[in-house]
Length: 173
Length: 211
Image (cartoon, rainbow over all chains, first blue to last red):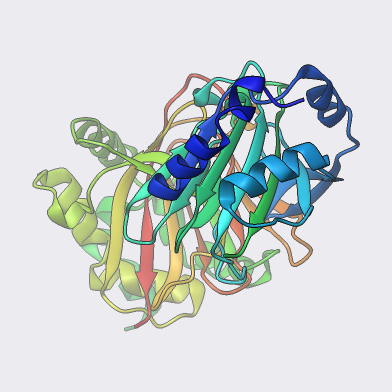
């Protein structure tokens, strides 16, 4: 399931995350998981001042959970959701949302996606600094949010009928 | 000041189309502003005298537009006109917050306004947008827009006004020399639809204040 290159380097990856607060692993999974995620039934959720996207519940298998837990050095629960962002989808930072700080775990399946389409995951610290994570196919992203807030950039008409699909779990320290 | 005399004000006549300085027309517009749904707004076509607007557009096209991007928007914008040295744009700003025009707006809306405005030029191109929000910020009472380009409905760039059920209840399509404005409140949910063609949507916009 997980690319063997990474399975043999868990201690190095753990050290990298601990030092940098982020980790990006390309070509992370085998094709079968990807097919499973792309075939999920997504349900549209829309609240114009906060978000527009489609969502589905998703459980990661134990191999992936264990792998991530070892890198983070703590056990994580299987509380993940799968999101699909197409044209006109977005999330907006809102005073009504209670942002929990901690670590974001993202498995990105954004196939054939150009950054000009929008849909990037953006972390902002409230003082003008930001970290933008461009969509990338079959990639694991671990990101320590610290006191950053997250939004998903609006997906524009250049995306046409393409969907930006990713799995997301957010965990407190 | 007596309204009929006030409508003879030199600067109003210099800037505004005669039909909007007709007492009976203004009475109708005043009622319309209050009655319009989903919240108080007006859309005034061919509002300014065209020779003035053409000069403004020419002046604006020489100004520098800066990229603006956040979770809520992506577009280009000039500095506030108070920081711009162009005489035509300064004259326009001075007119908008002159006693005469503020009184004109007060009459149409029924609000008491301060002689304070924000004003800048905006440029939306293919894929630019402004997502749903209410514009509320301390003192903002009226949001206004002067459209300087023509868009078709299916090209995007429309100003959508939402009702309490979060549905688009009114669509204002940008047309050259249309002056539109609405009351800013917790009900004034609106968005600027993404521009989806290779056209430039140019406008001047800002707010009138009551504090």
